Image (tube, rainbow, N blue to C red; front, side):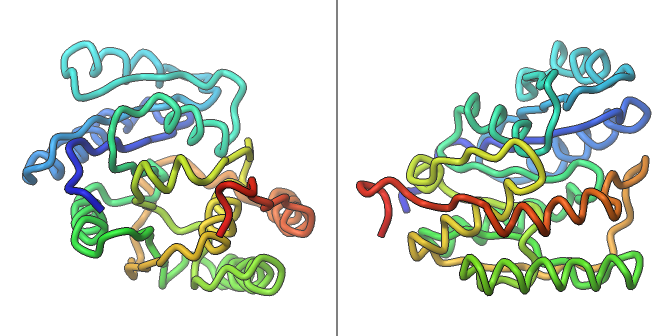
Length: 234
């Protein structure tokens, strides 16, 4: 992989007006300590509070922040909207509620050092045993059905090159986006490096994952289309 010239960090956010400012400041501080230029592509995800106003105000004062709204909503669509507008040749997306900004430079550096690969988080401690068990089942489903050999399909941050993004036609609008990316990367034979993360608390708000949404993910994984165009696959 050629040395990257710009890092684009995609940050979907939903109804985080009370803390998104400090989260973005954390990313600015941690990434500014490195030598790689970067941009933060913030994607308000069908927000009903003042998140759009807060991030818009920050963007007006710092050109490293860009705001691209997703009024339709959906995790996958928010990530795709951000990736489509990103200018970087090294790309990253992550969950703004569950990621420690200080940890991101290590993921980025690993991707640069290791060459063509996808670097991602593997969460080792979850808040509740039931959620831990549910995640284990989902990861097993991903392995048996789609050949995804990772410990934590949904773990973010995920860092990868623009070349990989171009090679993988992402289509999911909802929570299956991470599985689609990992399954298609597996079909391409992409090397995946997982970095363990331990017990980081949410910045604020509550998780939107519940039994109903988990069931949709289990069921959706059964029918997820991971076929690749003939010119791209293999």
